[in-house]
Length: 388
Image (tube, rainbow, N blue to C red; front, side, top):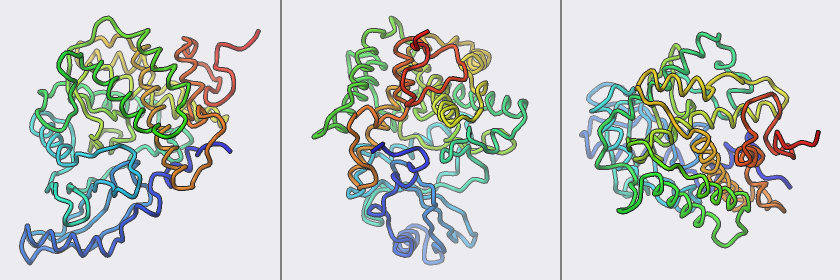
């Protein structure tokens, strides 16, 4: 049986065993809020959105604070019995990192309210932000399948691309933070540290099960093609994709999800933004849809980044392929989680746990670019290797 498909991934992300009861949450949050803001404060409602994240859980709440009703977002670390995607979560670190970015840049961010590092109130640490009015490019179904992004004009998508790259430029201009990021070890470069931590994550995810030969080959490819130089280290957002940005009139109004933040070469963020769009575009092509083949192209993203910063992105072939490996490891872990909860069967070929396996293979073979309309996801032979 095939592993989970993309349109099933939302349910895999939030199995029933991991869900907290909304009324229990409201009562517990209400008690916690009163202890911080006084007896006049109250949590009025709590709901679990139908589309939740792959790691920490998001709650939507309304509360009365100082006599004013506020719309809030509560990010809660996952419960241990939910088999979390990542081995550890530092939500207090994320909260302080967001505050650091807010204090030093003009990156649009939600209002920060409180961070609670103790698990006493909700059974896990959490932090609270203000809710922002805006829309997000959907992941399920992907925005390339038909969405407000695909229905926009070329000029509107150009604005979205330019302003999104502007977010990267602004993040990278921030001073390096003292909290909220995972740093490389002494004696290793930031990129080397990133690869080491990815390897450690994969080793943790594959404990007690067959690994994916494709991932092993990709790690070998990274070593064989490692850049001779790295750009000066900057603050890296980590999960730098348009699906983590809220927009209004095609301009960002809130930048979300900082759990993959680190310090490293800026190409990590630039390549991730390019790759994640290619992942969704390849899904659309596999479904015989046109998608958005010219949107967020590597040429446009690199040119816009250079225009805004003066830095010419380099070694993008390496960094985009490395992004495909990072995504492969995350997808492998998510499929392991799905198998654990009985939502997917163990495939005969472990590489089938990687939805974009043909993309990874083609990128390593150097046959993925230039783009054409050929599907590149689990389509058999990677593009460019077909017999004449």
